Image 1 (cartoon, rainbow, N blue to C red):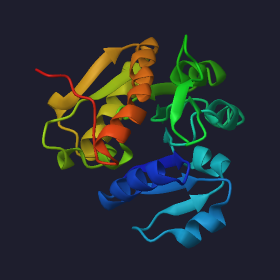
Image 2: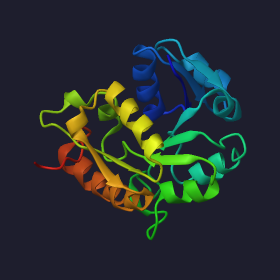
Image 3: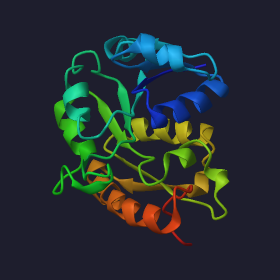
Image 4: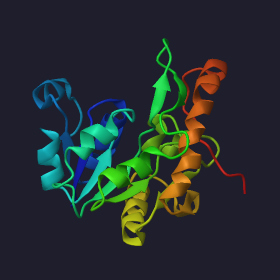
Length: 212
């Protein structure tokens, strides 16, 4: 059993925490209001703590905080995150009045790269950001095999992220290693497809896939 920390307590964090706890991991959710999040929780046993404590307790952590504030939130944890693996699943976007993405916060870069700059001692890997959150931990919900992308500078960190993906139900052949962290620019830009997809197809599970 591995202890995994997740920053955030929203829909993405909940989906990932539920599956990872179900397969036997010791999951710690780091959130600014741990007591309130714990009171609302109805899933398998997990631990709710302040973000800094989650960072101290786990060697592998997942960023499921809102992407437009992730650098500020996690940058404050720079020292405690030193030497850790950070799997970033968020997208940093500007949002319109309807709450939907209207543009990228980092149009000439990526959230993943900005996190790596803010956390130089942390090994950042980008993945799971090209699908509706319901697919992240249940890719078989789709009729067509989906793709999930990996971007990162550290091969061991990417190997750990790959193992995590497989525990979430992703088959090895569905995982596309794109290369270093700069390749996250491409996958993060795909978030701009989401508003028109949701408007045309409704709030239904989807993921981007590479046709083979």
